[in-house]
Length: 308
Image 1 (cartoon, rainbow, N blue to C red):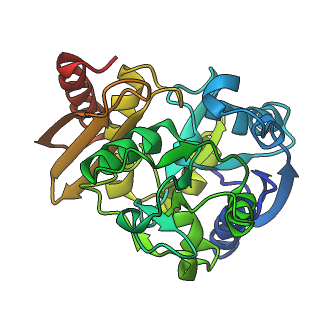
Image 2 (image 1 turned 180 degrees about the vertical axis):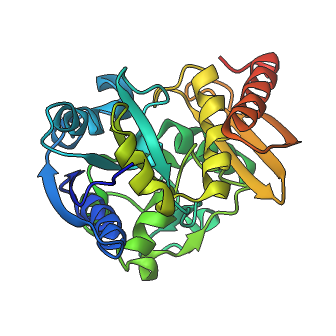
């Protein structure tokens, strides 16, 4: 099959999204493709006064990009995989998952090196229900019921600006985004996954295409990372089985050791008990279907434990 020589990448226009698109652009150019970028503003970028769980979920970050693919204005779309809905619309497919950056969450604060050092009544910023329930559990373990967790929306630069303005004592962000933009020095602490289990797909980049473009799928094959793809297939299967939206306070993280895939997941109630429902399993996997089956078993264990 003849591969395309000229490609257009649809991307959001935030600094991090552009870094990701330019990263893919450089890799494809190194393989002989001429690649241009089509910058776009999505509904998720425009709605900043409400949490994503209340306005339609993270799919708001990808719909306009998919429209560009559908209309032929772009060939591929580069996404942070944790922003990609668990089920893509008919006619689209995830053609490539690239090697993962650090999947962990990072604590960013000017004055406080850790949660235990926060002053009475401190405010932590996050827009993620997953981070909210995990932070509540950590704070409860520290006996810090006085600390408040408040919504924090906007792209990475906007969130850092709000922290710098003193609106929050500290904020929690994905370590991957900070590192990709050369902002690792802003990180005061990286949470161990035993304390803050990452979101499904966190730290990984996914490339979406129209399902009727096998030529693109072939062109993207060299950019794919098998270990990451197997891991995120299991993680996303957990989320899909439990409803698959950002209104789900759910964490899922998998690691591959040889042929053995280890998957852990956690669910919490943002309004109720601070205790988490957790589950973990492992299995030998050799393809995406087996990885997804492991995710479905872990999701079933979460439901048995009380997740909903």
